[in-house]
Image (cartoon, rainbow, N blue to C red; front, side):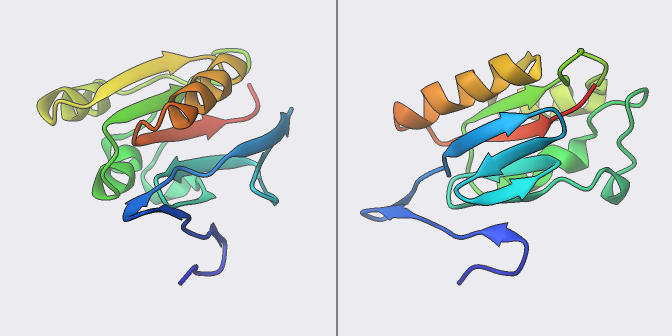
Length: 135
């Protein structure tokens, strides 16, 4: 059952499918009809990415707590958006966590991150993403 603020799960057989990104622009990304400023996506769902939950900022970068939720949903590949102008850093603890779990990850500017996520999703990869839609 989908919770408020989240895009619900879709299932292909017994495997959750990552939700599709249907549109995006400065300050927004549309995930299967739901619009988010920044978003977390994983096989079976998506929700708003609230940086205050983990202390993420442009300078401190994406924190390991930000990707922990994706890992809990069984992702094998993570796409990390550095923002449209590449201003969002990735903290070293985050890459260390992904490396320690053997999870493939890519850090890309937002437009390329969205394209890569969609490419991996279409290929049936258990992909997750953290998308920052502004700077």
